[in-house]
Amino acid sequence: MSDTRSAAWDAYAESKPQRREANARGEATWFNWTQHPDHGPGVELLSLRPGGTVLDLGCGSGGNLAHLAGLGMRAVGVDLSPAQLAKARERWRDAEGMELHQSEALTFLAEPGSFDAVYSVFGAAYFTDPGLMLPAVRDRLGPGGVFAMSQHPAVEGCYGCQASYIPRGPEEDPAVVKRWDYAPDTWAGLFEKHGFHDVTAEVLSAPASGRRRIGTLLVRGVRGR
Image (cartoon, rainbow, N blue to C red; front, top):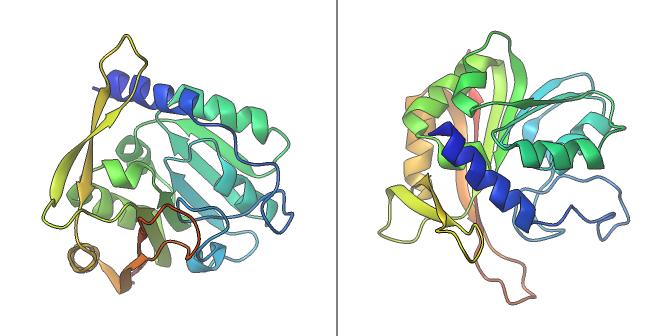
């Protein structure tokens, strides 16, 4: 199964360009929670201080991770796709404090050690059973550590485990991966059930301009002591 999923995300990586050289403010690195450029909150949601430790679940080509490393964090990224990690190493080869690992998210979370924050931006948290993911994340967070994740909001009435299809070229069937979709209130309840407090779950509206109108689901919780 992991080989099939890895191939799917490799195909996805080949279809996506590298992150822009600079954002609208002219910055070479930045943190973005949404699928819309230059939109939404930033790294402040993670409540990190310089020198803190942070884990990106499904780091992809590493743009958010590189920004955290540039702020003085020990920024660790895990991704199942070798192609995604190769793009990250190429683009951010000079980023100090940035570590990249190829692994299933749950496998990596089972290893020892703790982080001050864990996050997932349209990443592995979207594609992992929350009944397994949330306790695994909680166990890797120190007391008071933050977990935040963003993904597409669920289509009304389409909740639970869903199928996503990832194109693999004109001569191949699309790859199929599972994702988990819930309404914000359900996500908040799941976070609380698995030991998080001060939970917020909301759908951020799309920017007022532009033709893309789908918002972004953003869920954040703090590990209990």
